[in-house]
Length: 126
Image (cartoon, rainbow, N blue to C red):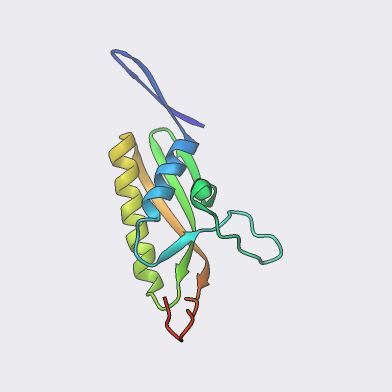
């Protein structure tokens, strides 16, 4: 669905994919988030998406000029999930509203998994 607005110079249409990409980029800047997860869970496996697929971990629904966003994320082990989710909600809302001028009515966060840090040679953790 497109968000359309009319100005004195013409029409502006913003697609769901644009909003999803903005939200995905904003959420990946948040501390404690390892990556985006695929929206579709198959047999209980969570797919960690690469940089080119961040928008696949974001669902966007529009109702007039209001935007409803659902994020599917994977967090790092040891972080406080509630704080990471709250930070992600605030960052996505701010980024999408600032860039598009639309009102973000709601941002939901689904934590699809936790990624443990991997040990390096010599017993150090990264």
